[in-house]
Image (cartoon, rainbow, N blue to C red; front, top):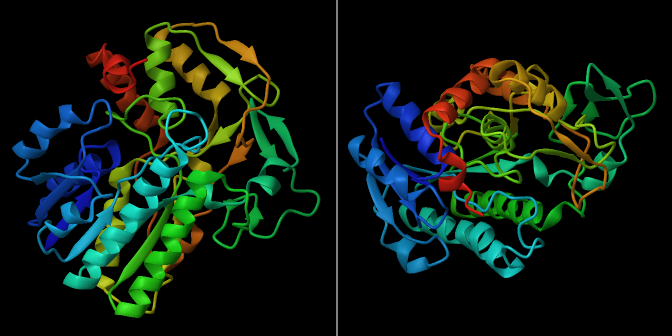
Length: 357
């Protein structure tokens, strides 16, 4: 099988390539990356060592996409993954839409011409901000938990946010770019009769992730704690009780294999949540306590001011993927954190390389 992975030099794309190789799958792998993110250039040599045919190109440029070889499947891992993108002054709103939406259009046009299947890695941030921001929560064991004694918004339970939860605006410019990409992917697949699968992913985490607080919070926090850099609990009560789940990208591979094998089948849902779920969920306060045990105590400051798009509790309910695809994550949160810690200890310059000031 011939597989193209976009964002191949990023954390998610690179992790998937590593997983394919470690599984011993005899697939022909092609990667595409624009190499603009700090740290991505350093992954190029490793991909070549693994036998990946790496193309240096930009998804926003249709001629770069047109020049890609024909493949059986495209897995789109390329995106500006920050919920603050387009509104934080670091990236313009136009740049965000060009990267995340126009890039999807160019890939879908490539699939239309070549009959390749398409898998879009989407995000938990397509879900409506207002009902999640207003969610009634209580603190248990140092972490927010939803109060379930009253009525909950449709699509939300103690197990997490399900696929039928509201996607009404506002969801952030980033969330809108991914939600629009989902809709276009399904329309292209239906109109031009090629297979499309959409996986809405929770927070990705693992060794080698670029350490930025708006994109790779687990890697950022562990690396910063180890280096004794200043850390702050920001927003809500300023005590770090906000909760996220986490997923290692390599755990996506078994699901992708089943989706590839299913082709254009209508027997499975086209869109599923994919995350570590409740078993992986932890608060920043709990994460900091883990770091204190692993690296020694390190003080953390408090800043209760609420930031745009901040949410107290984001945990995806992946039961649809488990039922439809017999999929569940294989890497525990403890393993994810230990791998990040070992990588941080082996790469003392990681924050400077992957998230320069």
